[in-house]
Image (cartoon, rainbow, N blue to C red; front, side, top):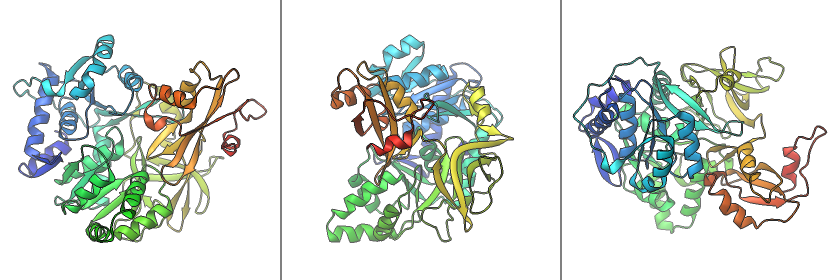
Length: 491
């Protein structure tokens, strides 16, 4: 049995999940997830890595379905509730998912697509659970999950992790951050990314702790949940901390003090998925008394580096490799960088993913001598690593997301009025970077608001540019390639 699920049997009567203020025990989770597994098996003895997609809001149903897929021997394919139909269609087609489990509010939108693709569509409120089936046994090297990341190409790639990869990622963080059964964490992160799935939910449930979900994020709702006195851990992206800080600044003095006193009692607060501005770190420390723990990871490797839990944390740094993770910095000439020298982060260890789904060439190019090439540059300073950024200007980090500029450009070029375009990331205190687009429209400049509305039917909202300019042509080098750094200056 998968160790994450096996451990849940140690705390049957303990509250595992709070969803909309309803408490669900570990026994509730085990029972529901087993029922989901029986439903998916439908008389089979093993799903044998059949892809099962699901579009569910973060909460008890989400975790039950994910655990159910795993127990039935399938590959979990979590979808993003905020993605438009074309983005969902891409993942469903790429994975060749056999079944799709959805919240009722998404059913009407997805019925035509499910019919077109021949996918079995199951609405979560109308599942007819059969009697408990005999669940399969399988090795830890079985593929467990596919999460999609934009990478440096125009189309997202499916990152395949095995059960062994996932267990390694969980165990490493549980030990490094000293998770306990008494912990209670609030999840405000989307659950189609490793940050929420592994760092928050899986680490908590591995430890016998409690995960609480909000129906919808808002600073007011987060602070209200904090004020109840149960929560003692929090993990978020810099953008969320920025929003919380600004909300706190507009509160009354008495409210500020009460909330700050409450935050001071937390055990741990973590920031990740994007670079944390030092100004945000300092503001949050003044409010909460906590120096946010910064760490470094990505979909392909889980978490690889972390500032220490108990010792001093250095602003702008992400600490050292976690136990079991090997790291080296490699310069452009292929030489391993020494202290004080810049290099690309390369990672090796049981945490590293298996492959990009059905993309053997992309997988091969991402490894060199068994080391995974992250594409991120760093430098080792006084026994702590500092991330310098991507070695490609075509990756934009905004609000915890890694966004491919090439993907957005490809969509923009499909607009009838846009001949060419260039997309870049501009520095922003709240979001880390914001997406900006230069449009080349020789005949007539389209209305930017209409372009924005059109894009939102093609792309997730976080990929839609926040700023636009129009140019007669894009800045290019002698071989005709757009020079992105020069383009940024025009904004």
